[in-house]
Amino acid sequence: MAGKMRVRASIKNGVTEVKALMSHPMETGLRKDTDGNPIPAHHITDVEVKLNDKVVLTAYWGGSVSQNPFLSFEINGGAPGDKLSIMWKDNKGESQTEEVTLK
Amino acid sequence: MTTTRRSFLKFGGAMLGTLATAALWPLQVFAARPDDAFKSKSMTDLEKLLGGTPTDSADIDFKTPDIAENGAVVPVSIESNIPGTSEIMILVEQNPNPLSAMFLIPEGTKPAVSTRIKVAQTSNLIAVVKANGKLYSSTKETKVTLGGCGG
Image (cartoon, rainbow over all chains, first blue to last red; front, side):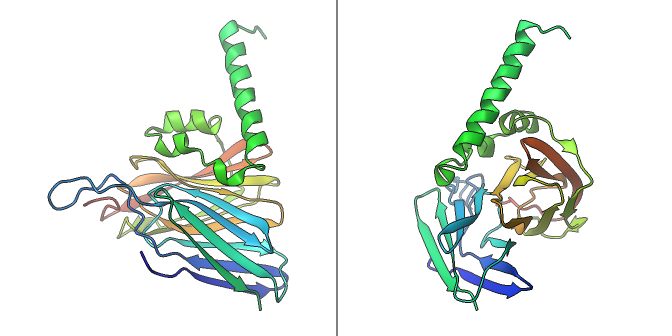
């Protein structure tokens, strides 16, 4: 799970469009491997998006969000130089944060 | 209206639940994932945990594919035109755990999200929107030709 999160944020007509692609197996915990042993759950549970330290979106996810989750949404406002950060946390306590500067 | 003890208790419980959620979530956002709701295996239980049965609404723009060739990656997009939208949820009726994702929308963020989810088998997909403490929903069926949770 060493993949990097890809975040794209662009300002259009006073609205900041955010698109993120996270790198995560999103294992539900319900599947079995070829030997019939259950594959333990390993999925993102929490996502927090901040624009200059203000939370602009919080997401809670179950294992049924697709592998390598995609997320897209829009924020009113945002100016060049603003910092947008996305952080996720999974059920094993792993986390990843990616920050981009708005242009 | 006659108030029986049972209905009174139910009402009180529901109110307490609403108050507790309303009070808790904005404050400690990250600590408040409703794990029970995500673990819930039935729509009935889930609705109880979410605070009731949502009302159908035409003000939710819910985009889903009619047919998904690959249930493991089903693009969904929800936009709420209901004023005061504070939460958006995605439910898959036939999944082992129907609740797939929940989004908290603070003021200043558009009540619109897109993501990709797994759909185990042909199922109703339900977008649930919480606005001013009330639940609204929009339902679409997606036919799945290849399941999303198989081994």
